[in-house]
Length: 316
Image (cartoon, rainbow, N blue to C red; front, side, top):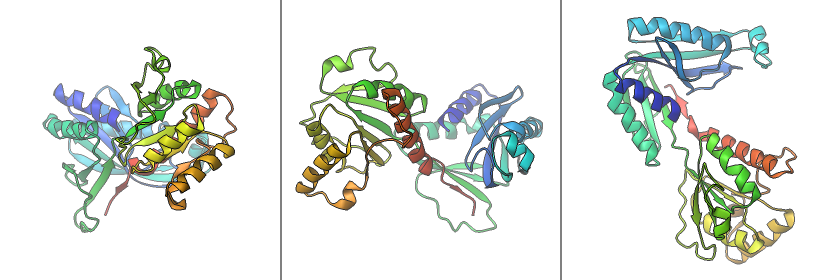
């Protein structure tokens, strides 16, 4: 979503009107879910996607035609079983899309959304389906807007930061994958040699004393992946992270490490419900063995976690 908004802001700054296509409803098997967006200009698709294949081709055609007329409209699309099979899906489905001609006068609103995301705030973008008029809402909009007011509201999430504790082999494989997947990544270690320039070119780094984590603060949009060099370090980090509202907490290690760390945490007063917040062993169960494979499994798990809240859209 951020990529789409940045591309839209650039075009609006240049005085170019742009058609924004948004999936506002879907049923059955379709390539993209509700909230997916695509930008189309006179030259064709610019950024984003509403699924690729025949649906996106049709949507792009409608968008280029609509760009000449302006305004906004809603179109329905059907994906037959044969068309779905060509995309690797079992059966077809339907999608409803909003085609919205965004004019340069909307650049200030677009910039405000980007500013909110950069400051770590989640916002709601509310669009009137009849007029295409958009407004930014910082609090959760009421669900009971009324059937006479056709609205589409999408929660736009900044995505939070991934704190990777430990700068070893897995972290070096993980950081670039996370950055490629659109996460902001910070690698923390207490060994300066593990944070040398060039070790984590795509991520930020921070030299940290794991014995002094009292001031560590992760927000509810943030993620923590713990992979330090020892049980005691993992224990200290996990104890600190569990005191925060972090969205995701993962710890790499064996069942033996988990038993050791959990026992010590319970001695500190942590309860079973709090420990259930922790993903350990970290990552999806794909049989990963090498640092790269483990990094892939962790990245996939974080993507799945992010997907649960990034696009929370509804139409009253």
